[in-house]
Image 1: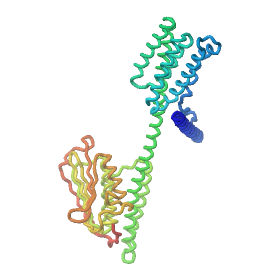
Image 2: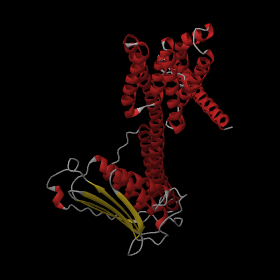
Image 3: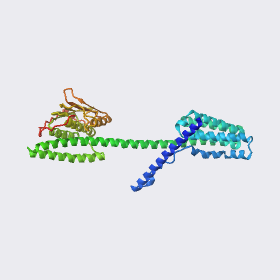
Image 4: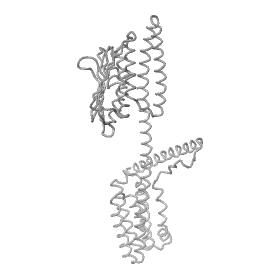
Length: 446
């Protein structure tokens, strides 16, 4: 029953290969139809081709037709022995070649034992009968090339060639020995080369498809992060300024209209940024984000204090720090219940650090399902942590020692990106404390 279970496993494996091939063919046809609809050349789509199986090596058994003809015509001594030898050779050949197309089964002990038995049967038939029976040596080389891959192929193929030549020379002389040895060498090496190349092509195709899937997943992740960071900040500013406009409208219409004008500007800017995020060309500016942070904090009756020291930063570094400022200020406005927020940017020749600290009394970390994500467990700062980690930096968020909440971003500055000049040592400091222009709007707890 062991051979029956082995046969069933082989049949199931071939069925899976056929199903995978049919899926590849359906994808190929879909690509051709899409190419025709797009006006492109449909022949550019790559046909996957049928999966390689042992059936590709079965036609080579026709090399043994001469031996079969000798048995049927009675020209072979002891025809029953010759017939049984043919049956044994063909059975072992089919068993070995079909297992050669699966790496795990190809390298199993049973396959190697069957290949050894095939060599013994080939030697017995060739030495016993000679003539057409010597053609089993090239078939043995073909089965060996299909089974033995890697660094041992050259040694095994050379030894098999010498063995086939020596056996033929002992049986029929040197004239036949050179031809059989050459055919055995070619069959083993060429078969191994073709099958190895076929496997490499299929592995490269699978790797390319996996890379394409990963690229799509990374692009989806990038877009989701950008969309969260853009809309989370923008909608928070719109909500705060709308509440301020509603409260100011009964008492100071001009101030309320100013808040409405700010809402319109924020909305237009958000539309532009979303278009840029979709196309993937958005590069944030730290100065722009600091200006927006002052406006948003002032509208929420939070005193903004901004300090910036160090050399000018590269656009890539400013873009990352701009995302951090946007997210941290959004969380201050939405969750902190603070009346003061300090934003500090400190740069050195090697690293730059951004710190956003508030004196709020709200809980430090919102729930993970909250869009703001004021802690590392939330969506916003979790995405920022991944962004900074990819750039060699880090992001930490948690309660401040003196109360409130602190978000700290730390990034390396490489020598070719850092700008040199006297500004690096000047220690320029900017402090902006905007007056509260609107009554403080109530905010939900973190």
